[in-house]
Amino acid sequence: MGAKTYYCSMALLFFSFVMLIVSYANDDGNLKFKLAFSITEPNEIWMELKHTTIGYGVNDDEWDISYSSMDLVQVFDHIFDSGSLKPDITDQLVAITDNYKTDLVNDINTGSGASLPQNQKDQIISYIDDFDPEYRDSINDIMDDLSFANDLGITQSTNDAFSYFLIPSYLVVGGMVLCILSMIMLTMMYKEKISESCCCKCCISFCCFFPTLILIIACGATWIVALELRDSIGEIDYDSAENSFRDGVKDVMNEFVTDPMDQYVQDNGINYSGFGTILDPIIDGMGHFSDELTVGTSPWLQCIAGLTFLVFACGFCCCRNKKDDEIDISVSSFEEPTSRMGGGEVEFGTEMGSNNYP
Image 1 (cartoon, rainbow, N blue to C red):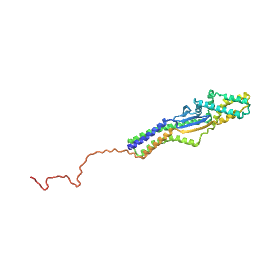
Image 2 (tube, helix red, strand yellow):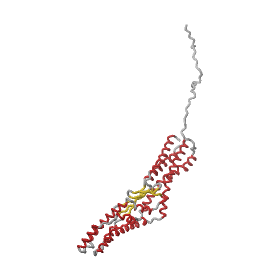
Image 3 (cartoon, helix red, strand yellow):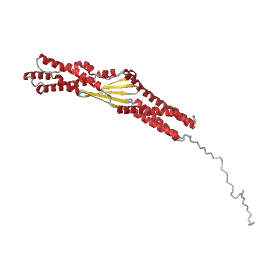
Image 4 (cartoon, one colour):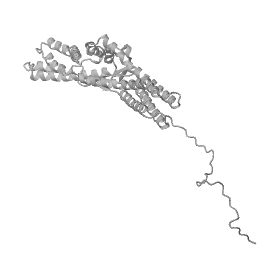
């Protein structure tokens, strides 16, 4: 195997190895899942399927849980009990209450309460304007009412299935080990410690290089294919969870707003019963459940590593692997060529017709 071929092959193997390391260290989630729901403003819950753990959170809160101990109901309950979500939900409940109070005043003046005596209108409108529900003091109970975890239809088999997502992390580590083994085998072949026969090359390719290629590409491509299959199937049906969330908001509004107001008009003999009629359209406009699934950077890096390893494998199979011969040039002797006419030694004498000079 020539030096250039060897060093190029080692460079490709090393690049694949580095890409696998970066993909494993840059653990931002092989798949990223976001679930949005709204009261008056969007709220976003996110999850990330990392190599060894599942990351999840909302707003500024984030946690990790192992695949083996995954429980989606507890995860969603934990999210709704988070410190950063409670203030947002409280502010949104205050905002929806203000909208509700505005609609009630309009209904009393021009709707179902238009026939009331003016003094009763003024009395109930004054009460509504001054009404201030104590959401913050009871926010823990409110979050329990709003949590829709129990209505997601999660079974134990669903939780157990998360343990399979740990397998790709083992495959990535296996790909790293096989990359190192490939470097060792290539070096031994270059140093002529292993035969370069076709039979030997085939055995190395099928026992080392080919499994490495399959592992590396499978690790990254599986996540990407899973996303494409998920998109082709369509969005998850969140109807039950969304209805449960709306029912929870309605229960909170009835407990903290509608029931006290209804009790007030009954105690003061005011014949008005439009509280529920005004609340229902507001509740129906909530929820808007939607999800988004994306692929993290790790699978793409793994695919790049796989393609690089494929280039190396093709070069290994197609290029000549005969080691460059070392040419020793030694000069032993240079002999004087003989005359082309076959003559031997030439002797020059003094006689050419005997010329003697005195």
